[in-house]
Image 1 (cartoon, helix red, strand yellow):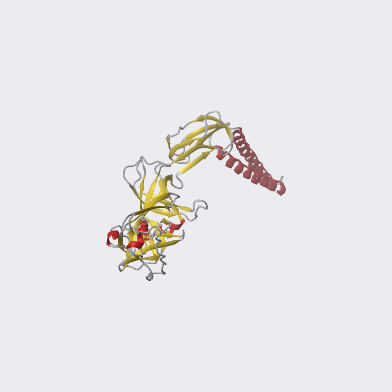
Image 2 (cartoon, one colour):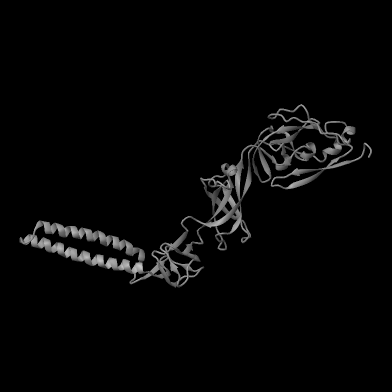
Length: 389
């Protein structure tokens, strides 16, 4: 091939997420990177070593392109003013705190009857399940016995008082009678507390009732099943008391504030649902490194159901300037650099990136306001870059 030919070479660039991208580098006869045209097309030509600079100070070396190659380069002026962006988060629809009731068995027993099916709407106090429990019969019998014993003890105390007034009794007998009344009063209170768990009724029958208005989400028992004390029987939930729970990475937590507007999109609803952030989790999950953020919807539609998945977009304020993510290159796996226009060429700058939102990456240090940053074609200027941000 003559010195005016075309050299085509391939290199693999590692992308975030473990993917690989093969990039064909086209060396035109009119392309010169820090050298003459004739040197650029030689098979053993090597790119110049460009040293990154600290801050916004210009480097001593740079990259120059001829007019034919500049059409592959795009630049934008860097603006240091803050801007608004959308933080996109995976989310799910869940019940609000206090909107779920796990109804359990008050005593061990056997299921005699099931009054509510999954999907039924029930009111507070409505019967859900009827149990047969020997413990219930014992509790009611103990309550009846405690009442009778206390009645007898009070009668004995009254008799002791009367006899003492007539002069045929003793003060010790009156005191003993009073002590017996106190003991049986305590026993009656304990029996009442135990019987209150059983509920109204007689014998061994126990009716388990709904503790709140709601819908039967699930039912864990069938007729004839034996259940243990405190075993789950029915799960109730209020389908109108919903909110959205999103997972926010710890690096983005500082961007989320209570009161920020947010939108939810779920496949079951055509339009976006409007809401706002109502709480930010105080603890970061040790494995996923995320914290929960809860969002209350302004008008949740009837079709919305707990367990639905979607994505939430929260409008956040980003301080400082930002550039497109394609403008930032990574060198040696750890150094972040961009290229800025300088005179007839381009200079490399070491930068410190911040958060990445909506295809833009925040730049905390390295570029001065007004400088023209290369936002397209940066890889043509630095073929040694390891990957795109």
